[in-house]
Image (cartoon, rainbow, N blue to C red; front, side, top):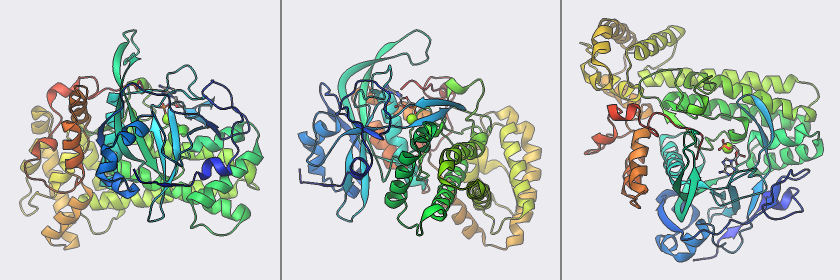
Length: 519
Ligand code: AMP
Ligand code: MG
């Protein structure tokens, strides 16, 4: 394999832990600890992302080489790599949890591409680190397939996200109690190499701040701005204020995207919030199928539903306020931080409105249009209608003679469809009148709607089918999904089966409708 350029700025410029290796410990005054991936029995590259490989400069021959499987399975390093785990804290389910850190993620270094882009490579599931607490530092194949596929699917949907280069099976079994019900079983282990310009999380700032270590906090903020926000100018508190505002803005845009495509993250703890506004840490996530703002795929959160679909924009605001609290020692007063939070609300609102208007195919958005959207949401909920299929199909309805027929396939329950049909007909008449006001030709409206309403999303049952095959060593399901999800807004001939409603068997099957944090 050719020699890659690494510039490991995080560990070069920020203070590290003097102790090396995975002994579990509290790490004070340092943001990272040197630790190597632990060897696995037989690393095998089950799948990789062609786009990410080519962006990073790995050729198909590189991918096929023993070196690649060794490196991305955690059994070796390429020249220039310097493995480490980072130190962060976080609020989990609303409660301050103290030091968490990369318990099963090990960064290998920051690769600089020939085009000059910086991409940090991070193995997830590569063994114990000082931050593993009581756990094994490993990841099961099912959750690794889910992270690998969704990272790439989100990218192609145009949603900011960390990426994935490779999915390597380890040949080792690991024990998991999938539903925390006292029935652990052995499952195949795997390692995803995920990739992002930065894996810095809100929790990285919260930890030094919680310990009163303002010097370390300041060092991290200065580093983050310099490396990850090079477009920001100025200095001192004004620069910090601009930066916080940027973080708020990116987070707002991310939330608007999640709501647009019907994505539910499932575990929006502050340690799972990227400073770059990327979707990060794919765990018990899911896609809304029958539209329900109270839905969460995460069984661990089923009681309170803190992280349900409709709550995500508010949770992001709450998480940003925790970040603001952590940054407060660097500011004089709270005004600039409050301004950032207000900016979040304004940006979220404007993006949400713009996306809603685009989803409905409207030229401009007025307050009455948001009411129109709201009444549609209520109908979709009441009648158990598939969000993705309905919005995609809405463009096909002939507004000269509106009828629900083109979207019948979006209904999960025929009786509810019949029952709600008059309300839908009334809504469609109102919608047709509204569309007519714009005077946009039908074909153009349809084309615009198709650009924001995906035809293909990574439904949990589709991921589960790919996992079932992967557990037999067969990557064909993964590649079939990667392929179709590469162009989620295009109708693809012979791919209808990936665009269908969730089948009835998947309503109750584990992994399809219910997921736990066990991974
Ligand atoms: P998550 O809920 O996946 O975001 O994880 C929360 C925290 O638990 C992070 O500090 C993780 O690194 C850690 N963690 C989760 N699973 C494991 C594991 N199998 N081994 C070690 N640490 C883990
Ligand atoms: Mg996490």
